[in-house]
Length: 632
Image 1 (cartoon, rainbow, N blue to C red):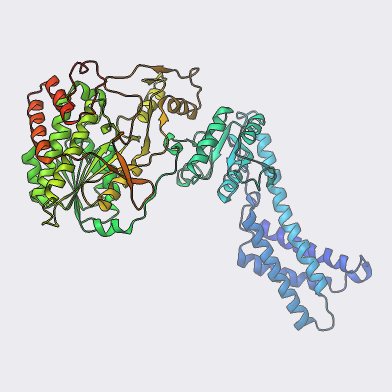
Image 2 (cartoon, helix red, strand yellow):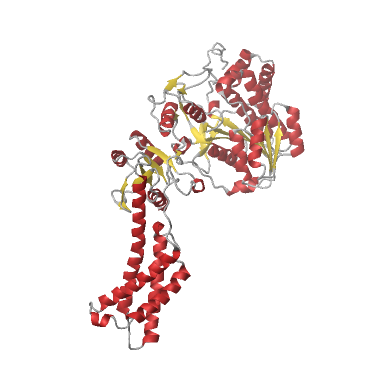
């Protein structure tokens, strides 16, 4: 239901302002002469005539009459005060140069007039605005649902803007009744007549008691731990936390409940995202030809996006997934011409040889891998062929073609692996490290390919990861499935993971395994509960959490280092180098070849046995493979 109110003609506002200017001159002279009616009228017509001419010119020049009166704001008021100040200056000029001894525009009268005229011109506009809003609120009573009470975090200009926008629209469906700020200096005070509450538990509890249903985050740059604590307190008190969309997405320059966005669980990562500002990255990557394997995947595609910022001469995208590759090209193809897509399987040696020979990459980022633990448990030979044989092929071609850096993406599942996928990635680590030491041992060729490995935990939002799965389960009404109540994982964001990979490529001198301080591990069950609450529902009431049991090869707790590994610091306190066991390349090469030969025959138990021979710490949690004797 809509209600339209006609806008006052601008000429009418112009005339009304001139009338009020004359009225202000009259009142000012009355006050100066103590209401002496015999002398008030002397020169009054002349003064009003001057005021009319001066203000008419100024009103026209500054367009002070052009604004919509019912939407008067601080900018409009400032413009009116400025016009009045300039007019006061001209009054004094007229008094000095034209009036002589008559002295109508005395300093006292001009000063009194400045305040009176400013007050009445601005006040009538604000009165019109108030009456209009009151009328609108009455008109919409019964025609819309009752407004939701919301609070806004924080008290900066952004927070004030959100408050003014929402509360100035009587037909909106939300009303800002409180501010929230983590500064104790503002706690308990008022801002534009609205109370400010603290972000502590007591402050949020008071918000809930006042009937606040939604907390809107106007500040998107909160410290992660503070944001997580604030969200936890709100959810515990039944307050939904949402954030504003980008301003360009606001409909008709207003916000309503349908436009607000839920907080992403990625925003609640229990630590600050690491930011690296290493100028050496630019000099190392600018103008280079870079090959990215697995380029259509979640990690590979983000790697490409970030690498493009460093102005390489060419990025070769390598992936065997046609549709994801096509979609990614549609995303970046029009904006970046220095990209070439190659559909290829890293296990296809001839195809990879062709790519190396045609494009001659100088740096390789190897992100292609089979990563899903349950699938690899059922297909160990395929895990070996892709993750081990594919890596070996790329490593050998990199050396044969003079690649400068070979950066491999690994996983924390390679540490004390309990599954085939983790063991296959550990074997890939062993091969590339021992291969580098074998090549660098003579110390005669400074141009030997430098092999670097990055090892990190689960990536939030990656293809097949837990968060997208939870979101899909929520959309279908639940339940959310978790394997075990105590299962925990380390998490990082996709951009952060890719930044680490790029940094390692520049920092590494060959043979290192870089590990990352990923903070505290997170319980998947707690993650599921938070995802449900962030959607505005209640766990185990609206959406159930079902525990399905650990899958074959899965372990409760992931590790970034084994008991036998130590770390060395780097220039960045959050990035470390793992000191891992060293292997003789000739022995590794023979065992890896034997493993690949078995995998090509798809001998399941024999393949797992050979994996355990290469990785003695690999103790399978899969009942099918438990009978395979570990050879230590």
